[in-house]
Image (cartoon, rainbow, N blue to C red; front, side, top):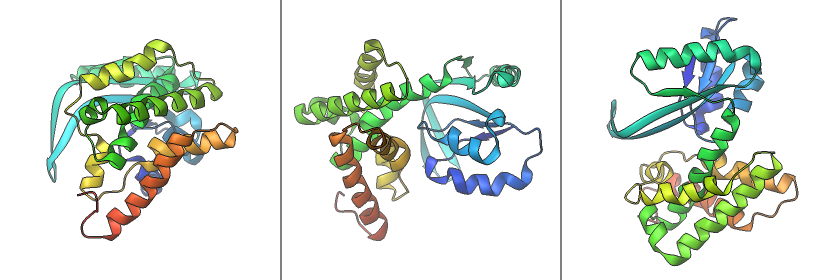
Length: 242
């Protein structure tokens, strides 16, 4: 089994690189952000060989080759097809034996969407506003923008037959309150001039909404600004937001 943990921007390239190392019995486990990577992997290697997971880990890169983890961690893992259940159970046991908190979900796609609610609400907005999670929550207009983004994501989810409960929605802001000093991963990438997961954490939801005739004006505006910022950030020595 190979575990895929790279940014969504690198999924296709990495898949091309690992092809030669795979056997006919190799499973791939995606622990990536967003809801599109499993489909990319399935198209390249077959859906029956892809496992899906959600990783809740708070960490930061202190220096090249050195990552510091803080707080609790949890892996939620599930199978995309019924034939993968045995392998999924084996993977979870392996993680648990290694001291990694892991559990099974029979609704792993829903779990991926649930994590995306927070990521899509706060990651893109943090970059276009250059704000921490706490600054977004404490600023009335930014908080209202975040609420509108969440509302649009929920509507997109409904069209994908993903049930988003009111409790799940309220948990987005509840979790944000406990992470007010957190700098989102997308804002960290921006500040370090790294490619941002714009498509996985924003573009996909905009395009998905447009495809089904659903209006997502706030997300669409943020997406357009993100594309400009990303191009400007990676083509100039100093970003205009710094």
